[in-house]
Length: 163
Image (cartoon, rainbow, N blue to C red; front, side, top):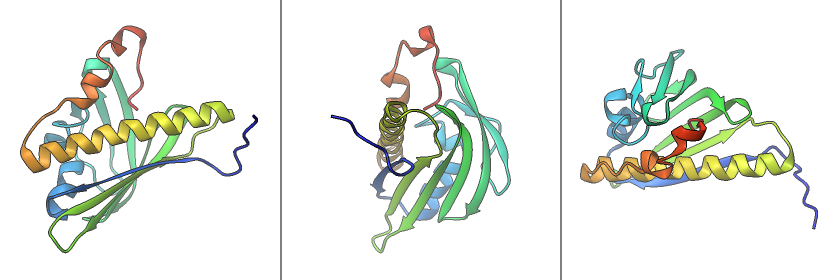
């Protein structure tokens, strides 16, 4: 069986977080909070036009993040070092009537063979799903589950990228 990719692939995952949109948005842009469920440190907060570096110290990995769109309580779009070079990630925050927030994360912009693109989409979707699950546990219940660190506890041995 031969499959053909006819349009640029996009990784997408989403999760309901039972917290107001202002709290969830702040959690994703504030390094004091996002480091509780995703990476270990950052050179600063996300803001319009901001450039920061995120670090995953447990893997000796980092990535340069450049914010290209910033709409408070609605959306953040940034570029970072994806599997095949710079890619675009977008976080969308949708406020709901019950004071919860629906978060959607997409990533796009990879280059490579069909097989490589399928792997990039699968890996990105999985990674961002772990990130959202960790955010949900932390923001709703104050529990730090360490999904990202525990996903690949020996990755630092062979090298690692932040996705």
